[in-house]
Length: 470
Image (cartoon, rainbow, N blue to C red; front, side, top):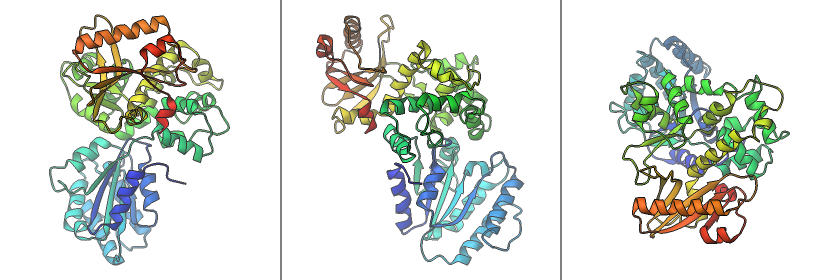
Protein backbone atom coordinates (compact mmCIF):
# COMPACT_ATOMS: atom_id res chain seq x y z
CA UNK A 1 0.00 0.00 0.00
CA UNK A 2 0.99 3.60 -0.57
CA UNK A 3 2.16 5.66 2.40
CA UNK A 4 -0.29 8.53 2.81
CA UNK A 5 1.08 11.77 4.25
CA UNK A 6 3.76 11.40 6.94
CA UNK A 7 6.30 13.37 4.88
CA UNK A 8 8.24 14.88 7.84
CA UNK A 9 8.37 11.53 9.63
CA UNK A 10 9.41 9.72 6.47
CA UNK A 11 12.23 12.23 5.96
CA UNK A 12 13.56 11.65 9.48
CA UNK A 13 13.66 7.89 8.94
CA UNK A 14 15.30 8.19 5.52
CA UNK A 15 17.94 10.62 6.76
CA UNK A 16 18.90 8.15 9.49
CA UNK A 17 20.02 5.72 6.75
CA UNK A 18 22.35 8.39 5.38
CA UNK A 19 23.93 9.58 8.63
CA UNK A 20 27.49 8.73 9.62
CA UNK A 21 26.62 7.66 13.16
CA UNK A 22 24.55 5.03 14.88
CA UNK A 23 20.93 6.13 15.23
CA UNK A 24 18.48 5.41 18.05
CA UNK A 25 14.98 6.50 17.00
CA UNK A 26 11.96 6.53 19.31
CA UNK A 27 8.54 6.42 17.63
CA UNK A 28 5.38 6.85 19.69
CA UNK A 29 1.71 7.73 19.30
CA UNK A 30 -1.69 6.36 20.20
CA UNK A 31 -2.82 2.85 19.30
CA UNK A 32 -3.88 2.24 15.65
CA UNK A 33 -2.29 5.48 14.38
CA UNK A 34 0.04 3.72 11.91
CA UNK A 35 3.45 3.67 13.63
CA UNK A 36 4.39 0.14 12.63
CA UNK A 37 3.19 0.62 9.06
CA UNK A 38 5.27 3.79 8.69
CA UNK A 39 8.44 2.10 9.87
CA UNK A 40 7.89 -1.07 7.85
CA UNK A 41 7.09 0.93 4.71
CA UNK A 42 10.18 3.15 4.86
CA UNK A 43 12.60 0.43 5.98
CA UNK A 44 11.11 -2.56 4.14
CA UNK A 45 14.43 -3.34 2.42
CA UNK A 46 16.71 -2.49 5.34
CA UNK A 47 15.69 -4.69 8.28
CA UNK A 48 18.04 -7.23 9.74
CA UNK A 49 15.93 -7.92 12.82
CA UNK A 50 12.27 -7.18 13.65
CA UNK A 51 10.81 -8.04 17.01
CA UNK A 52 7.62 -7.14 18.86
CA UNK A 53 6.54 -7.28 22.48
CA UNK A 54 3.52 -9.37 23.53
CA UNK A 55 0.63 -7.61 25.27
CA UNK A 56 0.52 -8.77 28.93
CA UNK A 57 3.19 -11.37 28.11
CA UNK A 58 5.31 -12.81 30.91
CA UNK A 59 9.10 -12.54 30.95
CA UNK A 60 9.34 -16.13 29.72
CA UNK A 61 6.91 -15.48 26.86
CA UNK A 62 8.78 -12.36 25.76
CA UNK A 63 12.14 -14.19 25.83
CA UNK A 64 10.70 -17.19 23.99
CA UNK A 65 9.35 -14.87 21.33
CA UNK A 66 12.77 -13.24 20.99
CA UNK A 67 14.40 -16.66 20.66
CA UNK A 68 11.95 -17.82 17.97
CA UNK A 69 12.37 -14.58 16.02
CA UNK A 70 16.15 -14.94 16.03
CA UNK A 71 15.87 -18.65 15.19
CA UNK A 72 13.95 -17.76 12.03
CA UNK A 73 17.10 -15.97 10.92
CA UNK A 74 18.65 -19.48 10.83
CA UNK A 75 20.85 -18.73 13.81
CA UNK A 76 21.65 -21.77 15.91
CA UNK A 77 21.28 -20.53 19.46
CA UNK A 78 19.81 -21.55 22.77
CA UNK A 79 16.90 -20.00 24.58
CA UNK A 80 18.16 -16.97 26.53
CA UNK A 81 17.76 -17.11 30.29
CA UNK A 82 17.48 -13.33 30.64
CA UNK A 83 17.58 -10.14 28.59
CA UNK A 84 21.33 -9.64 28.96
CA UNK A 85 21.85 -13.01 27.33
CA UNK A 86 19.22 -12.23 24.66
CA UNK A 87 20.94 -9.01 23.61
CA UNK A 88 24.29 -10.80 23.64
CA UNK A 89 22.86 -13.25 21.09
CA UNK A 90 21.60 -10.32 19.00
CA UNK A 91 25.10 -8.82 19.01
CA UNK A 92 26.53 -12.15 17.81
CA UNK A 93 24.03 -12.15 14.96
CA UNK A 94 24.91 -8.58 13.95
CA UNK A 95 28.62 -9.40 14.01
CA UNK A 96 27.97 -12.46 11.84
CA UNK A 97 26.37 -10.23 9.19
CA UNK A 98 29.47 -7.96 8.90
CA UNK A 99 27.42 -4.95 7.92
CA UNK A 100 28.79 -2.89 5.01
CA UNK A 101 25.99 -0.30 5.02
CA UNK A 102 23.25 1.00 7.29
CA UNK A 103 20.74 -1.59 8.45
CA UNK A 104 17.78 -1.45 10.82
CA UNK A 105 16.84 -3.23 14.03
CA UNK A 106 13.18 -2.66 14.85
CA UNK A 107 11.72 -3.37 18.29
CA UNK A 108 7.94 -2.83 18.20
CA UNK A 109 5.66 -2.43 21.25
CA UNK A 110 8.79 -1.73 23.27
CA UNK A 111 6.97 -0.93 26.55
CA UNK A 112 5.36 -4.39 26.60
CA UNK A 113 8.81 -5.96 26.76
CA UNK A 114 9.64 -4.17 30.00
CA UNK A 115 7.71 -6.50 32.29
CA UNK A 116 7.98 -6.15 36.05
CA UNK A 117 11.44 -7.09 37.43
CA UNK A 118 12.53 -8.35 34.01
CA UNK A 119 15.68 -6.24 33.75
CA UNK A 120 14.76 -5.50 30.13
CA UNK A 121 15.43 -1.75 30.11
CA UNK A 122 18.80 -2.15 31.84
CA UNK A 123 19.77 -4.82 29.31
CA UNK A 124 18.73 -2.63 26.38
CA UNK A 125 20.65 0.27 27.93
CA UNK A 126 23.72 -1.96 28.04
CA UNK A 127 23.18 -3.14 24.44
CA UNK A 128 23.03 0.41 23.13
CA UNK A 129 25.81 1.98 25.20
CA UNK A 130 28.30 -0.89 25.07
CA UNK A 131 27.78 -1.96 21.47
CA UNK A 132 25.19 -0.40 19.15
CA UNK A 133 26.24 3.24 19.60
CA UNK A 134 29.72 2.30 18.32
CA UNK A 135 28.41 0.75 15.11
CA UNK A 136 27.81 3.51 12.56
CA UNK A 137 25.94 1.05 10.32
CA UNK A 138 23.10 0.51 12.79
CA UNK A 139 19.72 2.19 13.04
CA UNK A 140 17.81 0.99 16.10
CA UNK A 141 14.11 1.91 16.08
CA UNK A 142 12.03 1.44 19.22
CA UNK A 143 8.29 1.97 18.98
CA UNK A 144 5.36 1.94 21.39
CA UNK A 145 1.75 2.98 21.77
CA UNK A 146 2.22 3.69 25.48
CA UNK A 147 3.40 7.22 24.78
CA UNK A 148 3.84 8.07 28.46
CA UNK A 149 6.30 5.19 28.85
CA UNK A 150 8.22 6.26 25.76
CA UNK A 151 8.45 9.84 27.01
CA UNK A 152 9.27 9.18 30.67
CA UNK A 153 11.46 6.09 30.48
CA UNK A 154 13.15 6.56 27.12
CA UNK A 155 13.22 10.15 25.88
CA UNK A 156 13.47 11.69 29.38
CA UNK A 157 15.50 8.83 30.81
CA UNK A 158 17.78 9.96 33.65
CA UNK A 159 19.99 6.86 33.58
CA UNK A 160 22.10 5.21 30.91
CA UNK A 161 19.77 6.23 28.08
CA UNK A 162 19.90 9.93 29.03
CA UNK A 163 20.26 11.99 25.83
CA UNK A 164 20.87 8.83 23.79
CA UNK A 165 17.81 9.18 21.53
CA UNK A 166 19.05 10.69 18.26
CA UNK A 167 15.58 11.26 16.75
CA UNK A 168 12.04 11.12 18.12
CA UNK A 169 8.82 10.87 16.15
CA UNK A 170 5.40 11.47 17.68
CA UNK A 171 2.97 10.17 15.11
CA UNK A 172 -0.35 12.00 15.12
CA UNK A 173 -3.67 11.02 13.52
CA UNK A 174 -4.32 12.04 9.92
CA UNK A 175 -5.44 15.56 9.17
CA UNK A 176 -8.62 16.00 7.14
CA UNK A 177 -6.53 16.32 3.98
CA UNK A 178 -4.65 13.10 4.73
CA UNK A 179 -7.94 11.38 5.58
CA UNK A 180 -9.32 12.38 2.19
CA UNK A 181 -6.17 11.09 0.46
CA UNK A 182 -6.35 7.81 2.39
CA UNK A 183 -10.00 7.23 1.52
CA UNK A 184 -9.43 8.12 -2.13
CA UNK A 185 -6.53 5.67 -2.28
CA UNK A 186 -8.92 2.98 -0.99
CA UNK A 187 -11.40 4.01 -3.70
CA UNK A 188 -13.81 5.46 -1.13
CA UNK A 189 -15.30 8.58 -2.71
CA UNK A 190 -17.16 10.91 -0.37
CA UNK A 191 -17.86 14.63 -0.33
CA UNK A 192 -15.85 16.65 2.13
CA UNK A 193 -18.94 17.12 4.28
CA UNK A 194 -19.25 13.32 4.51
CA UNK A 195 -15.54 12.91 5.24
CA UNK A 196 -15.89 15.46 8.03
CA UNK A 197 -18.75 13.43 9.55
CA UNK A 198 -16.60 10.29 9.44
CA UNK A 199 -13.71 12.19 10.99
CA UNK A 200 -15.89 13.45 13.83
CA UNK A 201 -16.89 9.86 14.64
CA UNK A 202 -13.53 8.09 14.40
CA UNK A 203 -10.85 10.75 14.04
CA UNK A 204 -7.94 10.46 11.66
CA UNK A 205 -6.99 6.96 12.77
CA UNK A 206 -5.81 4.94 9.72
CA UNK A 207 -6.89 1.58 11.17
CA UNK A 208 -10.46 2.82 11.68
CA UNK A 209 -10.61 4.57 8.31
CA UNK A 210 -9.36 1.40 6.64
CA UNK A 211 -12.61 -0.31 7.70
CA UNK A 212 -14.73 2.12 5.69
CA UNK A 213 -16.44 0.48 2.70
CA UNK A 214 -16.76 2.20 -0.68
CA UNK A 215 -20.13 0.53 -1.26
CA UNK A 216 -21.85 2.17 1.71
CA UNK A 217 -22.86 5.70 2.63
CA UNK A 218 -21.36 7.39 5.69
CA UNK A 219 -24.37 6.52 7.93
CA UNK A 220 -24.26 2.92 6.68
CA UNK A 221 -20.54 2.66 7.45
CA UNK A 222 -20.98 4.11 10.92
CA UNK A 223 -23.92 1.76 11.56
CA UNK A 224 -21.91 -1.30 10.51
CA UNK A 225 -18.73 -0.36 12.38
CA UNK A 226 -20.24 1.04 15.56
CA UNK A 227 -23.78 -0.19 16.10
CA UNK A 228 -23.88 -3.82 14.97
CA UNK A 229 -23.02 -6.55 17.46
CA UNK A 230 -19.69 -7.45 15.86
CA UNK A 231 -18.82 -3.98 14.59
CA UNK A 232 -15.06 -3.32 14.52
CA UNK A 233 -15.43 -0.18 16.67
CA UNK A 234 -18.12 -1.53 18.98
CA UNK A 235 -15.66 -2.65 21.69
CA UNK A 236 -12.57 -0.69 20.67
CA UNK A 237 -12.90 1.77 23.57
CA UNK A 238 -11.98 -0.68 26.35
CA UNK A 239 -9.38 -2.39 24.17
CA UNK A 240 -7.54 0.88 23.63
CA UNK A 241 -7.08 1.60 27.32
CA UNK A 242 -6.17 -1.91 28.45
CA UNK A 243 -3.49 -2.09 25.76
CA UNK A 244 -1.97 1.27 26.65
CA UNK A 245 -2.10 1.46 30.42
CA UNK A 246 -1.27 -1.13 33.06
CA UNK A 247 -4.11 0.00 35.36
CA UNK A 248 -6.51 1.89 33.07
CA UNK A 249 -9.39 2.52 35.49
CA UNK A 250 -8.50 6.16 36.25
CA UNK A 251 -7.61 6.86 32.62
CA UNK A 252 -11.03 5.75 31.50
CA UNK A 253 -12.72 7.64 34.35
CA UNK A 254 -11.03 10.91 33.35
CA UNK A 255 -12.03 10.41 29.72
CA UNK A 256 -15.63 9.87 30.82
CA UNK A 257 -15.59 13.00 32.99
CA UNK A 258 -14.11 15.18 30.24
CA UNK A 259 -16.64 13.82 27.74
CA UNK A 260 -19.42 15.21 29.92
CA UNK A 261 -18.25 18.84 29.78
CA UNK A 262 -17.67 21.25 26.94
CA UNK A 263 -15.08 23.79 28.01
CA UNK A 264 -12.70 21.44 29.81
CA UNK A 265 -11.81 21.05 33.48
CA UNK A 266 -8.93 21.94 35.78
CA UNK A 267 -7.12 19.26 37.73
CA UNK A 268 -8.93 20.23 40.95
CA UNK A 269 -12.32 20.20 39.24
CA UNK A 270 -11.59 16.70 38.03
CA UNK A 271 -10.64 15.59 41.53
CA UNK A 272 -14.04 16.77 42.77
CA UNK A 273 -15.86 14.88 40.05
CA UNK A 274 -13.77 11.80 40.80
CA UNK A 275 -14.88 12.22 44.44
CA UNK A 276 -11.38 12.06 45.81
CA UNK A 277 -9.58 14.56 48.04
CA UNK A 278 -6.01 13.79 46.96
CA UNK A 279 -4.17 13.65 43.67
CA UNK A 280 -3.43 9.96 44.06
CA UNK A 281 -1.46 9.78 40.82
CA UNK A 282 -3.87 11.93 38.80
CA UNK A 283 -0.99 14.12 37.57
CA UNK A 284 0.74 11.06 36.12
CA UNK A 285 -2.53 9.80 34.64
CA UNK A 286 -3.25 13.15 32.98
CA UNK A 287 0.26 13.23 31.53
CA UNK A 288 -0.14 9.71 30.16
CA UNK A 289 -3.45 10.59 28.50
CA UNK A 290 -1.97 13.80 27.11
CA UNK A 291 1.12 12.12 25.70
CA UNK A 292 -1.01 9.36 24.21
CA UNK A 293 -3.10 11.92 22.34
CA UNK A 294 -6.45 11.55 24.11
CA UNK A 295 -6.59 14.88 25.91
CA UNK A 296 -5.08 18.33 25.54
CA UNK A 297 -3.89 20.76 28.22
CA UNK A 298 -4.29 24.47 27.55
CA UNK A 299 -4.53 27.85 29.25
CA UNK A 300 -7.62 29.94 28.44
CA UNK A 301 -7.06 33.39 26.98
CA UNK A 302 -6.71 35.81 29.93
CA UNK A 303 -8.64 33.34 32.03
CA UNK A 304 -7.80 31.18 35.02
CA UNK A 305 -4.13 30.56 35.69
CA UNK A 306 -4.91 26.87 36.11
CA UNK A 307 -4.57 24.71 33.01
CA UNK A 308 -7.71 23.19 31.57
CA UNK A 309 -7.90 19.68 30.16
CA UNK A 310 -10.25 18.77 27.33
CA UNK A 311 -11.00 15.56 25.47
CA UNK A 312 -9.63 15.67 21.92
CA UNK A 313 -10.01 12.04 20.82
CA UNK A 314 -12.99 11.94 18.47
CA UNK A 315 -13.65 8.20 18.76
CA UNK A 316 -13.74 8.28 22.59
CA UNK A 317 -16.25 11.12 22.58
CA UNK A 318 -18.39 9.39 19.94
CA UNK A 319 -18.30 6.08 21.82
CA UNK A 320 -19.37 7.62 25.13
CA UNK A 321 -22.04 9.81 23.54
CA UNK A 322 -23.66 7.25 21.27
CA UNK A 323 -22.19 3.73 20.99
CA UNK A 324 -22.15 2.88 24.68
CA UNK A 325 -25.71 4.10 25.18
CA UNK A 326 -27.17 2.17 22.27
CA UNK A 327 -27.91 -1.53 22.02
CA UNK A 328 -26.42 -3.24 18.96
CA UNK A 329 -28.80 -3.67 16.07
CA UNK A 330 -28.82 -4.62 12.40
CA UNK A 331 -31.27 -1.88 11.54
CA UNK A 332 -30.01 1.66 10.81
CA UNK A 333 -29.38 2.91 14.35
CA UNK A 334 -27.14 5.77 13.31
CA UNK A 335 -29.40 6.76 10.42
CA UNK A 336 -32.12 7.56 12.95
CA UNK A 337 -29.80 9.19 15.49
CA UNK A 338 -28.07 11.54 13.05
CA UNK A 339 -31.19 13.63 12.58
CA UNK A 340 -32.05 14.39 16.21
CA UNK A 341 -31.12 17.16 18.66
CA UNK A 342 -28.41 15.24 20.61
CA UNK A 343 -26.62 14.64 17.31
CA UNK A 344 -26.72 18.33 16.41
CA UNK A 345 -25.32 19.28 19.81
CA UNK A 346 -22.53 16.69 19.56
CA UNK A 347 -21.72 17.66 15.96
CA UNK A 348 -21.40 21.33 16.88
CA UNK A 349 -18.99 20.59 19.72
CA UNK A 350 -17.01 18.05 17.73
CA UNK A 351 -16.64 20.40 14.75
CA UNK A 352 -15.19 23.03 17.09
CA UNK A 353 -12.61 20.48 18.28
CA UNK A 354 -11.73 19.52 14.70
CA UNK A 355 -11.24 23.20 13.81
CA UNK A 356 -8.91 23.72 16.78
CA UNK A 357 -6.88 20.72 15.62
CA UNK A 358 -6.61 22.33 12.20
CA UNK A 359 -5.53 25.74 13.47
CA UNK A 360 -2.61 25.90 11.02
CA UNK A 361 -5.00 25.36 8.11
CA UNK A 362 -7.24 28.11 9.48
CA UNK A 363 -4.30 30.51 9.68
CA UNK A 364 -3.39 29.60 6.13
CA UNK A 365 -6.95 30.28 5.01
CA UNK A 366 -6.85 33.68 6.72
CA UNK A 367 -3.47 34.36 5.07
CA UNK A 368 -1.83 34.99 8.44
CA UNK A 369 0.44 31.93 8.58
CA UNK A 370 3.50 34.20 8.52
CA UNK A 371 2.26 36.43 11.35
CA UNK A 372 3.22 35.51 14.90
CA UNK A 373 0.08 34.62 16.82
CA UNK A 374 -1.38 32.68 19.73
CA UNK A 375 -4.70 30.87 19.78
CA UNK A 376 -6.97 29.80 22.58
CA UNK A 377 -10.47 29.94 24.03
CA UNK A 378 -12.05 32.57 26.27
CA UNK A 379 -14.76 32.52 28.92
CA UNK A 380 -16.10 35.57 30.73
CA UNK A 381 -14.41 35.51 34.15
CA UNK A 382 -17.53 36.70 35.95
CA UNK A 383 -19.67 34.33 33.86
CA UNK A 384 -22.59 36.70 34.43
CA UNK A 385 -23.32 37.12 30.74
CA UNK A 386 -22.52 33.59 29.62
CA UNK A 387 -20.14 34.97 26.99
CA UNK A 388 -17.75 32.38 25.59
CA UNK A 389 -15.41 32.22 22.61
CA UNK A 390 -14.32 28.75 21.58
CA UNK A 391 -11.45 29.90 19.35
CA UNK A 392 -9.66 33.20 18.99
CA UNK A 393 -6.38 34.07 17.32
CA UNK A 394 -4.42 36.87 18.97
CA UNK A 395 -2.04 38.28 16.35
CA UNK A 396 1.14 40.33 16.60
CA UNK A 397 -0.19 42.74 13.96
CA UNK A 398 -2.74 44.25 16.40
CA UNK A 399 -5.66 42.05 15.32
CA UNK A 400 -7.70 39.41 17.13
CA UNK A 401 -9.74 36.98 15.03
CA UNK A 402 -12.77 35.84 17.03
CA UNK A 403 -13.91 32.63 15.38
CA UNK A 404 -17.55 31.59 15.28
CA UNK A 405 -17.73 27.89 14.36
CA UNK A 406 -20.97 26.52 12.91
CA UNK A 407 -21.71 22.98 11.71
CA UNK A 408 -24.73 22.98 9.38
CA UNK A 409 -25.87 20.87 6.44
CA UNK A 410 -26.42 24.00 4.39
CA UNK A 411 -25.18 27.59 4.16
CA UNK A 412 -25.46 29.49 7.45
CA UNK A 413 -27.70 32.53 7.86
CA UNK A 414 -27.07 35.31 10.37
CA UNK A 415 -30.44 36.62 11.55
CA UNK A 416 -31.25 39.57 13.79
CA UNK A 417 -31.16 37.49 16.98
CA UNK A 418 -27.76 35.96 16.26
CA UNK A 419 -26.38 39.35 15.20
CA UNK A 420 -27.41 40.72 18.60
CA UNK A 421 -25.67 37.83 20.36
CA UNK A 422 -22.49 38.53 18.41
CA UNK A 423 -22.58 42.21 19.29
CA UNK A 424 -23.08 41.43 22.97
CA UNK A 425 -20.30 38.83 22.98
CA UNK A 426 -17.78 41.25 21.49
CA UNK A 427 -18.77 43.98 23.94
CA UNK A 428 -18.31 41.65 26.93
CA UNK A 429 -14.98 40.42 25.56
CA UNK A 430 -13.59 43.94 25.09
CA UNK A 431 -14.76 45.06 28.53
CA UNK A 432 -13.43 41.95 30.28
CA UNK A 433 -10.03 41.84 28.56
CA UNK A 434 -9.45 45.59 28.08
CA UNK A 435 -8.12 44.73 24.65
CA UNK A 436 -7.31 47.63 22.34
CA UNK A 437 -6.76 45.44 19.30
CA UNK A 438 -8.87 45.37 16.16
CA UNK A 439 -11.54 42.67 16.35
CA UNK A 440 -12.38 40.65 13.27
CA UNK A 441 -15.24 38.19 13.51
CA UNK A 442 -14.40 35.10 11.49
CA UNK A 443 -17.06 32.54 10.56
CA UNK A 444 -15.90 28.96 10.03
CA UNK A 445 -18.75 26.86 8.68
CA UNK A 446 -19.42 23.81 6.57
CA UNK A 447 -21.03 25.36 3.49
CA UNK A 448 -20.37 29.05 3.91
CA UNK A 449 -22.51 32.07 4.65
CA UNK A 450 -25.64 33.50 3.04
CA UNK A 451 -25.02 37.16 2.34
CA UNK A 452 -27.42 39.60 3.98
CA UNK A 453 -27.20 42.90 5.83
CA UNK A 454 -26.12 41.20 9.07
CA UNK A 455 -23.35 39.16 7.47
CA UNK A 456 -21.99 42.32 5.80
CA UNK A 457 -22.08 44.21 9.09
CA UNK A 458 -20.57 41.61 11.42
CA UNK A 459 -18.44 39.10 9.51
CA UNK A 460 -15.01 40.20 8.31
CA UNK A 461 -13.60 36.79 7.34
CA UNK A 462 -15.27 33.62 6.14
CA UNK A 463 -13.88 30.07 5.88
CA UNK A 464 -15.53 26.77 4.93
CA UNK A 465 -14.57 23.14 5.42
CA UNK A 466 -12.60 23.32 2.16
CA UNK A 467 -10.12 25.55 4.00
CA UNK A 468 -9.57 22.76 6.55
CA UNK A 469 -8.62 20.27 3.82
CA UNK A 470 -5.39 22.10 2.92
